[in-house]
Length: 165
Image (cartoon, rainbow, N blue to C red; front, side, top):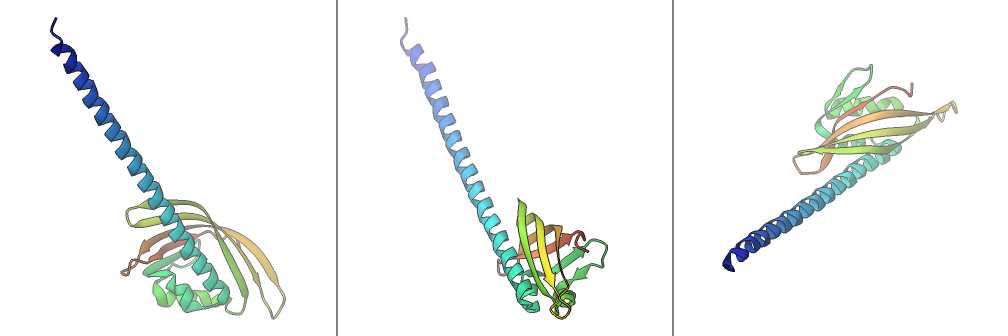
């Protein structure tokens, strides 16, 4: 009997085991890096939405507009599309005389290349200090975010329904 014939299958299985081990290792590293990247992107989205909510509460139209990409669009259901920084600032002026607060609850973040897509539930409250009239409402939002020329994540498209009216 030739004992060398038994070494060949063992070498083959050892090589196969090594390849499977390496493949498993690289798969786990890839999954871990992907999860870490998604977690970072989710955190970045949260920071942008927190910054936007804070700007809304402060009634700083320029700070609100700073949260948007230069060629951003706001697409409210049943209303005209708002395009670009100048129109965005003008569109915010409707609640200049109100006390307004908005909180974004992120329900999902999906990444596709440089884009992050966030599905949100927005809870807002308002009060007119002159009349003491007030109200609360909730809308569903869909935001597409992408980095600007400096690499900062900004709102690129913002769509929401008008359940609050």
